[in-house]
Amino acid sequence: MAAISEFFSTQHRACDRVFEKMEEAVSRDDWPQAESLYKELSRDTLQHFSNEEEGLFPLFEETTGMQAGPTQVMRGEHVELRELLQRIGDAVQARDRDEALGTAETFFLFLQQHNVKEEQVLYPMADQVLQGVLPELSDKVPGFTPSGE
Amino acid sequence: MNLGALSLENAPGFWTPVRFFLTAPVFGMLAAGLIFVDGGQLLQSRWLPGSLAVAHAFTLGYIAMAMLGALFQMLPVLMGAVFPQAARAAMIVHLLMTLGTLCLVFAFLVQRPLLFAAAVVLLAPVLILFGAGVLVAIFRTGKVSTTARAVQLAALGLIVTVMLGGYMALGHAFGTAPINNVLTNYHAAWGVIGWILILAVGVSEQVIPMFLTTPPYPGLFNKRLAYLLMLLLVAGSLLPLRGLELAAVVLAGCLMLAYAVVTLQLLGKRRRKRFDITNAYWQVGMLCLVPGAGTNVYSYFGGAMGGADLALLSGLLLLVGFAVSIINGMLYKIVPFLVWLNLRMPAVMGKLKPGTRYYTPNIHEVINVRPMQVQLMFHVAGLLLLVAAVFFQGLTVYAAATAVLVSNLLLLLNLAHAVRLYRKYSSRAIAVR
Ligand SMILES: [Fe+2]
Ligand SMILES: [Fe+2]
Image (cartoon, rainbow over all chains, first blue to last red; front, side, top):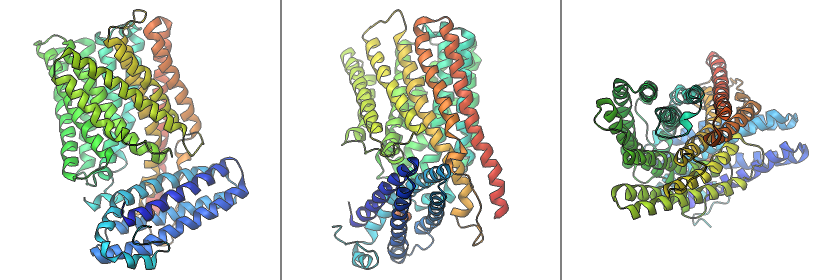
């Protein structure tokens, strides 16, 4: 797998694992655990979004000249995902089990369809067109190395 | 690859798939009603007019209906291509499918040539065109996912199934051909394996690991499975050698068994342990696929079981047990998500005034889990009773038909609840905009 697909898809998987643990904690009514896992989930997810919005997407837009293309769609979905994430946080704060689980399910389904589009279309394309400018990406995305190590 | 397909703006509208999804349980109810009225004779042989009517109410009215609806939804993302005029095409396809299936079901029941002719005219062109459209569109896409490839093979399966079925129906219409056992067997094999099973294999490859949070299918097994099944079908159909056909039947049976076992194992390894209705339905489906494949091979070798028509039993397990179960489960994943997604569309597409927010129910609120569980219980009861009715007849038949009827009615009500919620909140979302 090429460097961009590898790095960003791995982050998707990592966020999924934290999400699963948080959901599990909520269903056990283990609220302190749920709260701390929620914080972790929120931090990692928002970091991933900003890796995309401030690192990958602008570079993609510059290189391809597509400003209103797929990256715009992904940004729009991030807005909604942030809102859902916030709503999960509120529900966890309020210890509202049904709302937390229902919103978590909603977040999860929407996130998965978002990730599929990135992993199957956007990342492979980015891997192709951004081959020459990978070092630039590593300046903006913490932890990213062009070699994919 | 057309990046426009990524845009939700190009996603087909809410009603495009949903009209198909709402129709499926209505045909399920029709099938149950026919079994009830018939009183069980039709469960004794698959060659009776009544059993053929019920079989097609399920295969066309329920299974193909729902699968086409799902394909209208899936294709843009799968192929990275926009389906031109999807909304209008879906409306026409749905109308022809509904009318055509009704004609065919009643053609079998009353044996009127004119109804057979009408069914062929209404169904064959639209299904063949749909299949060909999918086939060509995915072919043009070039490099595609395993799932898209399986969808393409399934489209081929659909075309062959419809051609064989259409040819036989024309025989009924013009009295040129009596019921032909060999052709019927091919028609059934292409329908069950070439269309339904191959599509299920393709969909599960992507859907099960992602939405049911299992590990991915191991190795290349599932990735090659659709090709293998198609290969066996073609070999078994084209080379009229008894030995080869026998080998194809046995091998296909083994592949179905392996697919069911592997999938059940995966479902047992879900990382999210909470009860998930879709997961339960996939499990029921896979548990039916095992005896369904088994009885098919057994009956092919002339095996017998208390005078029951084993081919009919196998068909029951594969169609109502396997296909209907996983479709029912998928509907509970897809419909609530579509309701939510379409309600959030103005927000996702940035069409709201900055700072405006509006409330949308979460997915668990769109259809509550409890009524879905109740429906699942009726579905499973209906399945067990149907299998029992094949052997015992009598009162079992009425109990089976009633359970299947209630199960489909509850499914319809649950889906209708989601649709009502969509209607209620979509007017609000627009008001905010
Ligand atoms: Fe993203
Ligand atoms: Fe992402």
